[in-house]
Length: 379
Image (cartoon, rainbow, N blue to C red; front, side, top):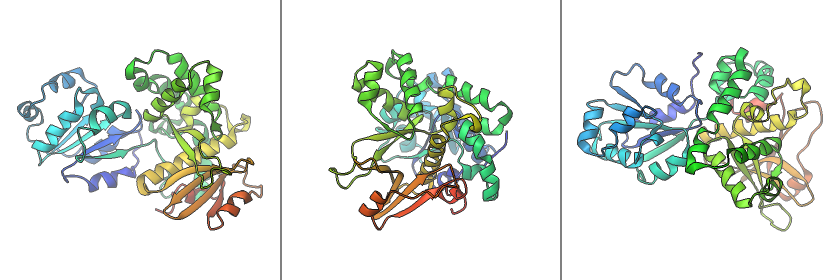
């Protein structure tokens, strides 16, 4: 498997040995363990513990200083993979960081469902959280020209950016379908005994067809003949398992601008396409515009998470149906972006938007100019 430098590595390294537990979260198979192996595999003072193994989980059942000491010995770095599998993981990590101050503890987790309830609360003030996503285009194409990266877009629009998929392109369709089927629902279905996996599957497929459009929870509920609260809770579970994310509407005038709707996107194009079993070549598709919008916005959010976490993402629409695909707010600055796959048309940002926000910075993002938007060349 090819090795790529991950943008998150420098941030992790900055926080080593500063008295905090480093918690690395992200979907399964995004490369959390690989990243840590690249950082520490040659460090003989590193202890690796995989909580997917029952023997590890069982050994940590006793929450005592002596038991912890007998496990970690004199290691300077202790890495616990899939920490959410350990009972009382938050209390365990609290004991570790409070009593073994010369040791750096790092924990990984594939679902914020268990992590948020069982880990973050006991670790208040003692942990720094990092989110690792599927590969970014920036990570994949270091040193490549804009033209070279443009040639790779058809692959990522269809198959996405998961490491295993990118490293084994000949088997991309099999791998992304396997990943979606085997890993996508694993954490969600295990959470609180979800009793209707078929309903979860239907919701996910409806969301896959609606990327780039506003999502009405009530309409989804009516279509599926279930309560709106049920749909809302399932979408929240998909968010916390890092499958989808929401964009809320930006509004400074509730009478003229939509303020309560959301758009829902997938963190990975390949997962989206696998969910609806649609892996056709771009020339055979009628959803290329949606795929382009999903790829660009997910790429931008990855980069913002790594480098510009204070930027707030939105979309914009008024009640006359004028809209802007993606809006960013940074302090008192407003940025508006339209995602257009067709680079030959003379697209413009909505005049309704620029009339309301005349000082906004706006751009059309197409295959000829996307590298700056995705922060490939300018970090």
